[in-house]
Image 1: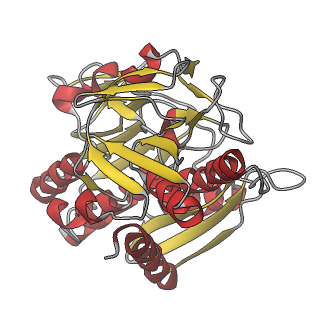
Image 2: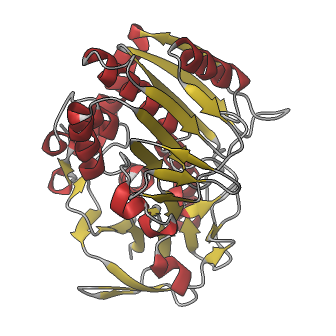
Image 3: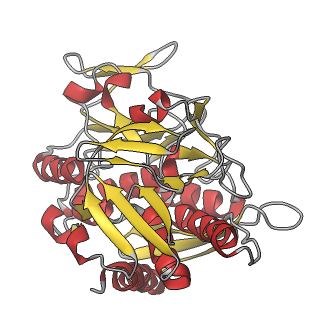
Length: 375
C-alpha cells in the first residue's frame, strides 16, 4: 500500500519536495500538494515587476501546469492542523496522511508597523511591486526612506536590491540628483553570513550616494506628517518603502507547532517534535535564512528522510546550502554561494557583480520552471 504524504504549501520547498518524491518514490507514495493560491511566483520576479521588466501577470506560473507521477495538486486553504494526529482540515476536505510536511511559508504583517499599511509602499508582493513601480514613475523627487521593519525576513539581499533599483529608476527619469536615498536595517551587515558580499553592497551604496544606517529600526510612520519614527527620534520622508514584518501563518500557531514565533525543527532533519511531521521553508526556524534556495536544500533533506521511512534504506542528505543572486542595478548581478553547515563553519564567497551573472540568474529560474512546470 502506498504511503500517503501531504505537503502544505507549494513554494520552492513544497514544489521541489513533491518533485523529488515523484522521482524517487512514485510507485510507493501518494503525494497531496496543497496551496491556497492558483499560481507560483519566484520571489526575485517581484524585482522584475518593480523594475518594469515585466508585468504581474507575466510572472505568475499556474499550478495547473504542475503534473508529476504520484502527485496530486489541490487548491485549498488549510484551516486546521492536528500534528499529533497528523490530521489536516482544509476548506474542502479532511486528510489523515501517514507523513505530513508543513511548508506554509511566511506571511506579511502590514499592521505590525503603525501607519505602514496606509502610508507606505512595499515590493514583497506582486501587487505591491507594481504599485511602487507606478509611484516611482510619478515621483517628483525628494527623500526616499527604505526600512527593514523586522527580523527575520525573506531574502536577505532584497532590501539592498530594492534601493539600488530605486536609484536606477530615479536616475533614468533624471531626478536622482533631486532625491536623497536612505536605507535602514536592524542588522549589523547587509548579508551577515558573507563579509565579502556585505562589503560589495556597502561599496555599491556609497558609490551611488545612498545613505546606509545599520542597527536601527523604524517602529512606525506618520503618513500625515510624513515622519518615520525610531526609538528616540524621527526622520522626514517623501516616499516610505518598508520590508514588512514577517510572521508564521496563524494556522501553524493554533496547531501548537511554533516556538518563539516560528515552527521549531531539528536543523539536521527538519523533523518537528511530532513524529512523522516535518517543516521546511520560510515557516520553519532552522537557523538558516529564509530564501527559496535554502527551502530547496531543505526539501532534499526531507526527501531523503521520507525515502528512509518508506523503504527502510538510504542515507541522509546534508542541507544548509544555497545561493543568492543580488541585483546591483544597471543590468549587473552578484552571486553568493552559501554553505551554513560547512566543516569549520559557514562559508559564503562572493562573485561579481557582472552582466554574466544576470544571465545565469535568468537560467536559474528557467531550469526550475522547466523542472516543476515543464515550461
